[in-house]
Amino acid sequence: MKMQGRILDEEEVLRIHKDSIRILEDVGVRFPSPEALALLESGGARVNWDSGVAFIPGEMVKTALKAAPKQFVLGSRNPEYDLALPSPYTVYNMDGCGVNTIDFHTGVRRASVLQDIADSARVFEEIGICNVYWPPVSPGDIPNESGGIVRTGVSFMNTSKHIMDEVKKKEEVAYVKEMCKAILGDEEKVRERKIYSVTYCTVAPLCHDGDMLEATMELSRIMAPILVYPMPACGTTGPASLQSNIALSNAEALSSIVLFQLVSPGVPILYGSALGVVNVRSGMFLEGAAETALQMAAMGEIGKFYGLPTMNAGCLTDAKTPGMQAVMEKVLTTVPLVLTDTDIIQGIGLIESSMTLSLEQMIIDAEIAGLCRRMKDVIKVGDEYDFFDDIKAVGPGGHFLKQKNTRAAFRTGQFYHAELCDRNSYDTWVSLGKKDMMDVAREKVKGILDGEMKNPLPESTEKLLKEIMEEARCKLAE
Image 1 (cartoon, rainbow, N blue to C red):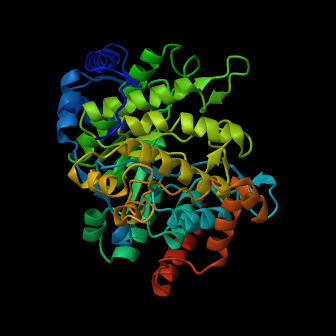
Image 2: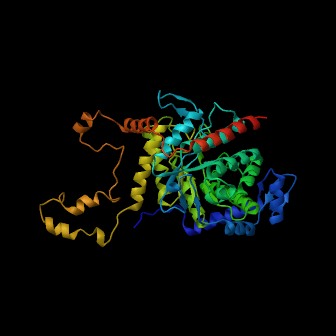
Image 3: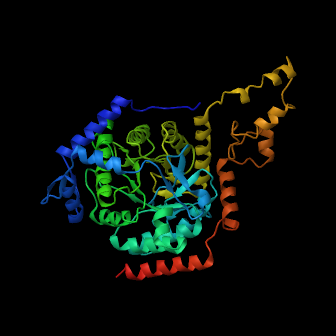
């Protein structure tokens, strides 16, 4: 038995799909790339070369969705962390491109630096329910031109789980390939193991970024998995209707899938989104709102309708510091996605609309994820859970503490043992130092950072990665 949720029924999903096809056919999508437009035109799209807009017929969408694989594996440099998709349960990812960090040592919010990626990757390595690491911040202490390559290299050096990042220019792709080859040995293994995937963000409404588009097209030629990631917000970059904003987002996602399948038929696609709403007073993008959670879960259902693995933004908050608002909004934006079977939720460890990293929040979010997973598993019913013999042996007025089944049952997944929530008596809590959730999370982070690195790269491989990063620093800055 599993707890299930639905945001859209089958008829509503089909209605939004048809709305998206209407957008693609009648409004079109701008592709600022002659190479992309030529491919689309050869595939059957009507192209206005003056505006760069392609009008994509429904038949092209159908062909692309048929070509996209419905199952694949996100590999890791440590095969123990390989993630087969679709996943039997929801796993978690960081979100990328924040600019601030709450300093673990001082507690002060500051601009992010490269060390923050190394530290967060080490913490991520120790969280069992986390599988896909997207460097969560853009460090201000490295050149922007080579920033993506350096982020990726530092990520590979500090976690052995799957790495996801962005490629913003075509010139970056060769360095990504070289890093993966340094770890795996040759390009054939890079294609096979898929230890790196790329996030591809469309530009709402209904546009693509030319440089990122051509870079991702190039990367697709080694069959690197692509997360298509539209981000329209109701009322600003998207229409002020949840239904139409979802339809617009889906149209952007489908336009991406069509192009990447034209470039490399069979390239793995993760269907994703980071939709939002806006603060009507300030115009700021809101992630912690109920409407954000509803849209993300609905997009997940549409991805499942297409048979694609799904990765959607979730576990989100607009809170400026860890605390009550952060926990409330993160639960609100996690539960609907878990109940609608989203494969990967992206947002762990970030606050302030995904702009600020907190290592302690990573640990707290892992607890939220564990509790949500337990709720999804609900109550197991069957002969192995029928303890009638225990009831008969104890009888009226007894207790079950000494029963063998009791001891065994508490060691199974039937009972979730929280790591951060204090469930002692008041007196015991006082005697243990009156620690709150943040205190315990800080202790866990400190233990990870002070301890030995888990699953380090061989020194020779790390040396190769550093050489590739240094070359990128020099050549991409030219």
